Amino acid sequence: MKDKTIDYVLRTTWLAVAKMYNEEASKFDSTMATGFALLSIDPEKGTPSTSMGPKMGMEATSLSRTLKMMEARGLIERRPNPEDGRGVLIFLTDFGKKKRAYSKEKVLTFNEAIRKNVTEEQLKGFYEVAEKINNLISNKNIYNQKENSL
Image 1 (cartoon, rainbow, N blue to C red):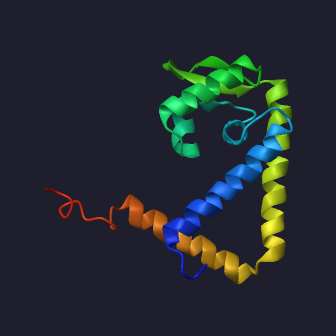
Image 2: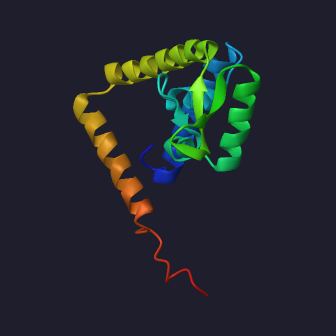
């Protein structure tokens, strides 16, 4: 893979991971997005719907569609936020908690498999590079905004 660009490796790796998760989730009539949403909801206190998008890296429209589907399937319920009358908290139903446990098991299995096949040093390097990439992007240090103006 040394002759591949960094973005190519990131994209193809993520697509492979997403495909793997979706294949597993489909065995239980679910999706990767649903699994990530289930894992992003506090199973005891619920989670404000507005905090889920940033936590999951999802756009509001995609998240809204996912939550609507999850509610229709009986995985979640929406309740008014007692601390903010305008807000809504998302809570897991008992069925949602069961599906969350399944999703958590699959994520932990994936992590365990990776940890068994790479050294601690390699994993540390992976995390360091990922953090550096995220910082470069979030600080807008890759494409100078002035360079892009016409």
